[in-house]
Structures are given as C-alpha cells and as structure tokens.
Image 1 (cartoon, rainbow, N blue to C red):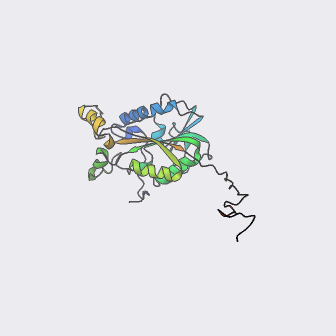
Image 2 (tube, one colour):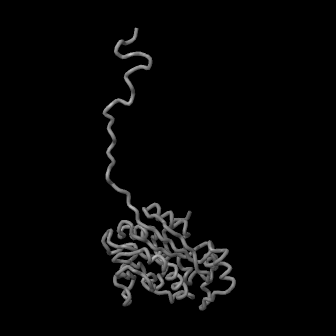
Image 3 (cartoon, helix red, strand yellow):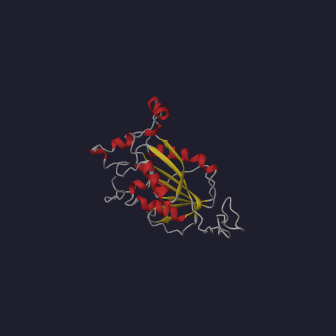
Length: 245
C-alpha cells in the first residue's frame, strides 16, 4: 500500500468556490451532518481547515464554533496548520474535518491531532472524496490532475477507518453521498443520479465518517488472592484422621 505521506503538498482550496459544483457539495455535506446535531452537544466545535470553516451548519447545538484556517481571511478565528493545532489537549467537544486530509502532507498526523484536542467521548466528523467513484476515476485523466478536487490525494473510507481505530476512535457511522462529476458548474439531480443513489451508493463521490473518542480506564484491577488452597487435602475413600494402612 502506498504511504499516506504526500511529498508534493498540493495547494489547499480556500473555499468551496474553488470547485466546480463546490457549493452543491457543501450543501450536501451540511445535509448529511444535520441529523447528528441532535446528539452532539457541548461548548466548542472546532472546524479544521478553510473548507470546514466555510460550511454553514444549521441545527448545530454546540455553543461556540471555532474556525481554524490557513490564512487571515476574515473568517478564521485561528490561523494555523491542521497538523499543529494551537489548542490544549482534551478541550474540544467536536472536531470537523471536511475534505482536509486530501490536501495535507501528513493526513495521519492530522487525525492524531484531532484525537489529542478532543475530550473523552468527543465526536470527530470527517468527510472525504471517495477514490472508488466517478470522481476517483476521473483523477487518472492527465488533463485533470492540476484541477480541483484532483490536485489532492483521495483516501478510501476503509483506510481512514483503520487510522481511527488505531488511534482510539470508535467509528459510529459511515455515510456515502454526492454523485456529481465536478466537471461542470451546475449540479442537477437527474434520473441517472437518482438511480445511483438507490443502487450504487457504495460508489458515491463523498463519504462521511462519524467517530467518537474512547479511552480505556487506567485503574488497575487487583487480583483475587486465594486464602485457601484450591485442592482438597483429603483423598477420596481414605480418612485423613486414620491415614493409610
């Protein structure tokens, strides 16, 4: 398997306008996240990356949304890299990584940083491009390699889930959505896309992973000392009082 490190770090898109059909994808991501806001509460939601910060999340019940971007564009509350979060450990209730791993040199370290800043039982919401889709196949075309979203490197949902399990996350759900080609401006929900939504969901262009940080208790379990021997001193059929004759 090819290493996750990306030696040629691509340019990070500043907003969803950098993609053809980008606004439609942003709306689709917000729609997929909508049901999860019924069970995610807390004080701080950290949106990591310019694309995450650019998402509008109606129905989100987390009190404060912190935007962490790569440039001081007026929308970011913090300017930093996703793999070096300037936030204390175990201080965030939920982290949103939307199309972030594809455009970073060390995506595995970004997931570790999200785990570090999350409170125990905190939520990680992660979206990415599915390489096993029409979008993924179009990336093999030489004339598209320098266009978004194909400048980035796509990671399969299964591979990202392996990273999450290794670090200590419990994956609660996996959802697949969006069937646009991102080759034209307009996104239309035609009969072909409706057919794909019904029968070819595995090959959708994007996926959403919802995971929760789990920590094992460190309290040692004391062994139960046996005060009496586990075997009987007497021999069946012979009295210990009179002994053997």
